[in-house]
Image (cartoon, rainbow, N blue to C red; front, side, top):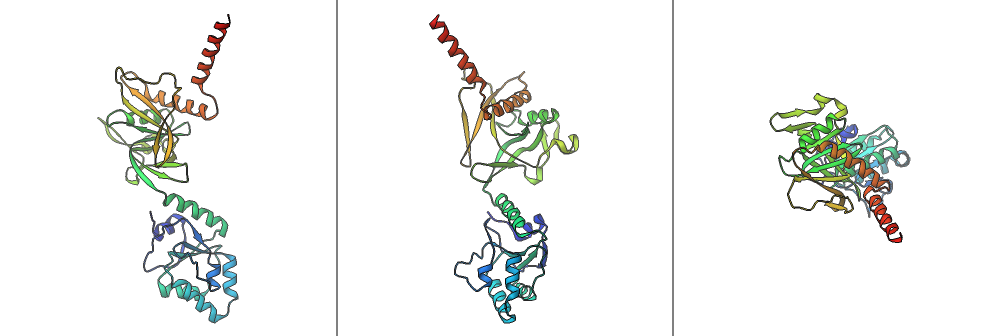
Length: 307
């Protein structure tokens, strides 16, 4: 994965001091502060990273002689760096500006302090460069829980999502869900920009959920907490009626709790989704109703034996 410097500039609202001639893609979330390079050490220069100069680097550079300033700036920008960002709104030495123009490198500036900007930048790059896939499904936020609804076309995913929106929950994505792996155990789902906030209901067509129900009815992205597989009710098939068996689905190497919900006329799927979300939250807090019932049954059996 990679992103362009131009996209980063727009998203982070950076000031352009020198516009680069050739955009070098950003391919890593790591950031480099070029203090050693400004001192002339290039043996392990991570030039492929976004370069950030703060108060320390700027002060050091200003302390150099005029001749060294030109030499070090020229050497630094001769490498294929994606860009250099100067923080704190600091004044940028003319030698740096001149060298950036000479080699056609992006020279940028932000008013943020170095530490705050670097943290923001790393978080931004971590999300933008995260591995991603697209699944056919619906993602909804129910009681703060990200529920990914999967199933064959026409099973009722979109209708269920619309009913949930009417009940005060929020739509994240309909039909196509872009999933990004952020960190070791976190999946973030969102809708492709083209169809964001839209939902398709067979027999009606395309609906704009944001315009119909207001901004409180949508979310741009949400962490995925569980998967709900909707399938046609099959007579004779075994379905877990107690909830003692835990089922999981692997997405991008992460195991997510999964429920398989059989669909047939008369079942209110929206209410089932709400109850599933509340039950999942109870389980995460240490209470499992199925286990509690099983415990009571075992206790009654034991007391019956003793009697």
